[in-house]
Amino acid sequence: IRLANELADRGYTVHVWWAVDRRRSSPLSAKIRQHWLFHGFRYSSSRRGSRIADAFGKLLTRILHEKNRLRWLQKRQYLQDRVMKGLVRRVCDSVDGDQRLIRGFARSVADARITHMLPMLSILCPWAIAARRHVPGLKYLVTFQGYELYVKYAKLIDRERELDTRLVNAVEESDWPAIAVSEDYLKRVVEDIGVPESSLRAIPPGIPVDVTCDREAAVELLASRLRGFRRNVPLVTYLGRRDTEKGIDLLLYAVSILRQRGLDLQLAICGPTLFGSHYGEICRQLAIDLRCDVLWREMVSDEIRSALFTASRCIVYPSVHREPFGMVAVEAQAHRTPAIVPDYGGIASAIEANGAVGGLRFRTWDSADLATQIQRVVTDDKLYNRLSEAGPKVAAYFSVENLADRVLTHMDLTSGRGGKDR
Image (cartoon, rainbow, N blue to C red):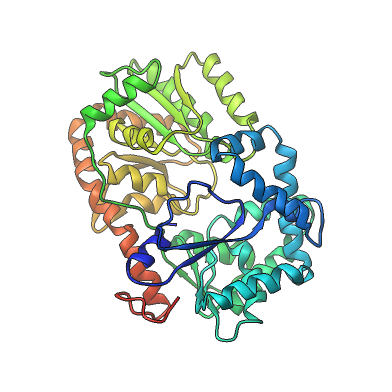
């Protein structure tokens, strides 16, 4: 969405096609024309694609706000599993089996006179490939981010090799080397899927870096909105999904260790879940067993999210798996708040750029070392001030403007004006 808005601001004619779900209150620019490709329900009950289920899913996005829709789906994990398995199955079987959708998509692309297509998820590339058979001259670029989610569902239906083949084919069909969101993620795509390294380029995501950091105002806002928040106690925050791979239990152990060391701090854990509430409930019970008071929140507004970034002594991302990148860590640094991340995966590279370091790394899966790094930031004012000052310099490297420049350069397009490219 950020890239689309930036390109529109630069004079490019931008269209967005939504797949699986659609945000009703999307932050897309008014300059951008939005379309449906399909809703996830389309393939949840039929391999060929059910137009009735598709229409029902689209209707839900119109009548239910994102927050309510997410809660509704979280209570029906079986339905979300069916959507994801159906999507993966459709790709493995070949999207050509749904010709009605392909023809309609190709028509809308041709009518909009699209010249370049950038599927933001590699799983969606087969639809772009199928559409361009009907649209002469249409070019497209693959982006790898979060492919491991689809591989997980492919394993559940015993079709992992077929999905890998489809993704490799998507890269072969691409008009440029595919994008991976970090150098480490690039290596992972090579190792896991078998894409040749020469067919990949690392281009990190982009975030807005021009943010306001009024700490006193942020503290007062949190005090008025978060029950139990203490103004004068250091706040350690996790912002992200509450799912098993995110390592929230490690953070709970680390905070418990710090309290045994006599360090007084408060912990906020905020974010939704993608895979049901089981892990979140386990973490809540674990917090009770550890006698660790936590400021729990599911969905938070952009206002509260920004306040948490600004008011926190540090942002912790304790993930236990090989993260593609670390958007939350970069956002924290843009707010002058140090980020603490594992030394494993693409996220490890998110705290250092432009000759500056805006955070600390801890040994992956090691809650004791995580506790030590948190303690350093909380108790060492010189270290905190140095990391805080460097944060915006690191974040600037990952700006939306730089992302757009890198993508346009990669596609050999002029980065200043849109011209005839759409």
